[in-house]
Image (cartoon, rainbow, N blue to C red; front, side):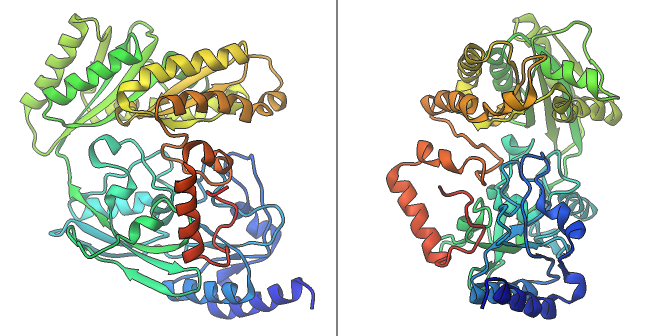
Length: 475
């Protein structure tokens, strides 16, 4: 019997489980599920399976386990580290959760939502808002990313400073295990001190231990007032001092605090229509901050205005604008998203999603910039990100006029220089994008032999055949 025969037999069984609409085998139909959105990787697969329920996922996984067929779980396929697409050899079946898109329940008094893994984040946000509650997870891909993918990558976003990342927002999980069994851990308890917290194994597990099919998420009161400020600062160090002042002045009401270099704004102004330059004079650095309150009060805005005025007087800021309407706030936030979109128009960009202790952000930016500029003259460092939680997207645009392919061929070299600084500052090589395929070989740099051994033991215990998203996360 050839290798293709058991796979074909398994696909016949899977087709019977999910129906003709639940399986894709034509190359043109599978293509969107096999390519990483950044275009660096494109995989192959005998089929993309789209189950419509937890029971169907479990049955499909059981068939794959019996036939020894590896699986790649996939949400919205917005991974930045090639964690959600198969390898090029075409052995793995993709299981997309996109048809599992039901909000199962909202309990406003318990401040919880129970949702399928395939629910798009924006839909979950809207459902929470309709119930008078807030789901605070927010990021640029919220119109396409899905709850299961956010959990599996422990996503962060712009509100981590106040609400935490995905790990902090999950109360319970439903997971299909590698052998097809279902673990129903959909508990909505804030206190449950009964041994090992199993859900934490699957949050950030990138689908290597099981497939998240449902989750209980924390909700919060909806803010009634939001104040958004765009502030010119002379340096990252000044930005951190400003953050401390705003937290104190507002009663720790800062929900977002984004740092960006002037080059980031220049890219956005040049390439993305609708981007504005909010302040009269250019500045080497900017901060986009949002502060929220549960009640409407002139005093809240006045306290922020006073803190910004003092920052200008003390030299921590050169200028600032405070949005006077929701439309103006949206204009300011548009700048942040335009920065991401604009970089691709400047040629090759080497991405670094890293974190350090908040107090060490200025040191990291200075040292990492010096390291890559020495190695690659003309390189254009483009740092921005959620500095309030220590997460910097330290992206490196190619020198002007350089050959894009030749520049991107230096990805590992230049990233290695950044990682050296990160490790020296007790940071992380992945703040919110995960490890996936791109960063797995760097894991021994940040994990001790003992830690790697423990991770491999967990993997072996929960996935003894090594069929769940193989070749991702662990080297």
